Length: 259
Length: 149
Image 1 (cartoon, rainbow over the protein chains, first blue to last red):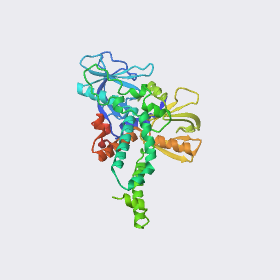
Image 2 (image 1 turned 90 degrees about the vertical axis):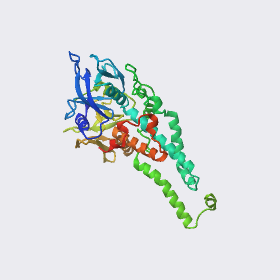
Image 3 (image 1 turned 45 degrees about the vertical axis):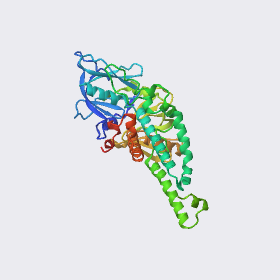
Image 4 (image 1 turned 45 degrees about the horizontal axis):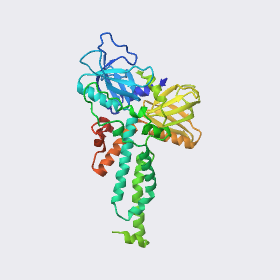
């Protein structure tokens, strides 16, 4: 299978933000045979989004390898050498050996396990969806607090909002329940799987939505210009009413409602 | 650069965000438009021969630009070399627009921007950090500063 490798390598070394970096030891995986001494190979690792790159050194110009972190679980593991703070990236795909890695210390190990188990695109998408609906709710409750003539002007928008809200209730689990992002790494040897795998294996909210061919973020609020327009509607409505009143053409009903 | 090809193939079998048979031309000298099954899964665009289970290839959709070339054709090019264009031909203008919209939102970087935007907006409205409630407020990828680079 081909991959646009040159662009991927360019992305790996570009100045776009890295989510985590550090030295790790690597055993096996990606064609490297486990070394006889069991010491593994020490490489510089860079996590960008759902992509884990390795380099010869922090100054390395070209990545040695890439692991796409989709459909995997990350768990603490035993290294071939004692005193290593090891963990494994396991994939559900057939015939795929786990990647065995080790950090320099317990803190680095914990940080890597945490960040790798939440690296998947589907996890990111769940958090975005959750915040999207929180923002919608916040905006709704703000609208409810405003007892003013403009409430009438907002009814034009309330219909799509309501239908979106109910679709969220049908499909949307909170990511905190699905993936336990709040959990911490406690005790070596405890299984940390599930964080990254939940939405992959189960017919979770993401796959339910995606199966229907929907775009990653609901079109209603995903694009900044749409959001801008959305806010703008209220202002336009206010302005329309103000003009109406200024022209003396105000309906009596509105007069009564005004504070 | 080595990459986990088998796992990527497994990803190509996952439910697609978008899928359709489109005409596709790769940026190679003398290449022609061929009928391909195109599948968008997460931030990867897979392309298949129409009757094969394994994809011919995948495009990672980071640092890419999606351009409308004709009413019903678009192209994808990558920051590293904007002249190299993968060209796609759709059945209608409408279909073309759907693909352009979906592809321009498909990157992890787009997700990150959306997340930071929502986070800031919610904080402004409620005074609370929504990520703190999820226990992930410290993560580097969710910080405003991560967008400066």
